[in-house]
Length: 189
Length: 375
Image 1 (cartoon, each protein chain N blue to C red):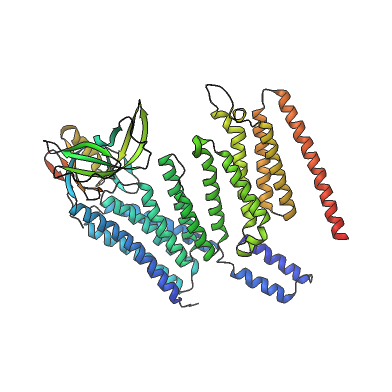
Image 2 (image 1 turned 180 degrees about the vertical axis):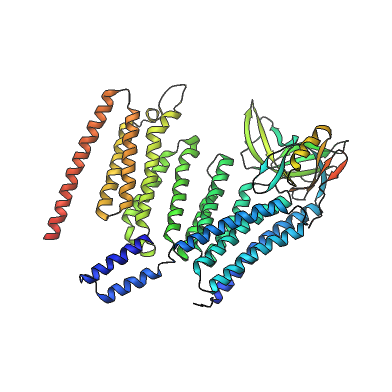
């Protein structure tokens, strides 16, 4: 039994396929422009090796600046809140946190950059609030089997992440630096 | 569907006994035929196959594409999408509705897999529920535009996952979920009106409302759950005919509302004590001037009211849920009053007398009803 498909359904099918493809295209374009146009900074890290069932090997990157404290008297922070950390470049080329704010700081100058993060959890510590922050740069996917290699390398070499920070503070991983060498520096597309 | 088949059989019998006229029976059969696609075994298998194919494609791609360039990988993902929807077009075009819906489901699954794989390609660690939301929104669009029930079920599940994940991350009620729920409800009501889909939505909403009791006010807002449940029951019971004129949902709505109301009462009676202030050792109920007995009597009154309503209207779902609530209430009260044997025996005595009284009342009402009809 051959039944012709209605034109409405044709259009609907095309709209769905184009919409979903556009979402994927936008994800890639957004990332690529962030990586190519964002300010490049270097963050020290140490990796932990878990495994994702569907996504192959990846390392969780742990940053010193993920642990921060709000001083006494600061407004109460809640999980899910947006937060900005101000980073400054040290003499060793690595960037570290100098300030923490709920609003994006402006007029930072050439040697500072503000990176946007999210409060993962909050717990009280005396009259201070201890925060755990995430910046969307905590997972690094590596070819299958290399996660363990990477972890072994780290015992002897220092590991740093090359991060691009956009004007609005969003961050994206560009590559990894092991010792003096940048590894996994992939082309954008 | 099972109900359809039974109705068709009964219809034949009624027609033979002359209770239903031949044109009447024909009209009923036509309407049955139009009530959405029937869930045949072939369609169910096709949807399952779509799920498996999707999982297979995802794991294959994730394990084998290190050698490809990023652009090559993106083209592969888009080809997967195009192939699914192209397949759907071909199947719909041949009148194979169910298989077309399965291919649509495969497309939605590929969309989700692609989101994960793009995140992998660019090391996007972001907020995982955001990815679930994007996936769910794309799936909902497909379900509504293509009137595909399986995809709608997937979208309802993804919305629930999104809400639950955000709730878990924040440790607080996540209100935006309600917006997604309304969109999915409206989408279903305006397209296929698939009953199983409405049940999934009702189940999700029930879960959301009950969770509020454990999330708001440090987990002490079960009274709000009770109120929402009671309001739902009142609306479903008193405005039933009005609701049913638009969507025949008041009967199942009553069942879910009862489950919600009782979940609130159950927590207030039997769980709140566990969270009592350990310093003063005051049970929550006593601290809030609410004796257990008052709550137990309220519970029994609501359950018996629901039983009564279920019997009158022939709502079997309501009957069973009310029986379940009744059993839970008895078990809860038994454990709560355990140790003070006198209290336990007193409780069963009171409950027994209460039930006997209600049975007598029901009998009187039934008789009056009969007398009315015969007069």
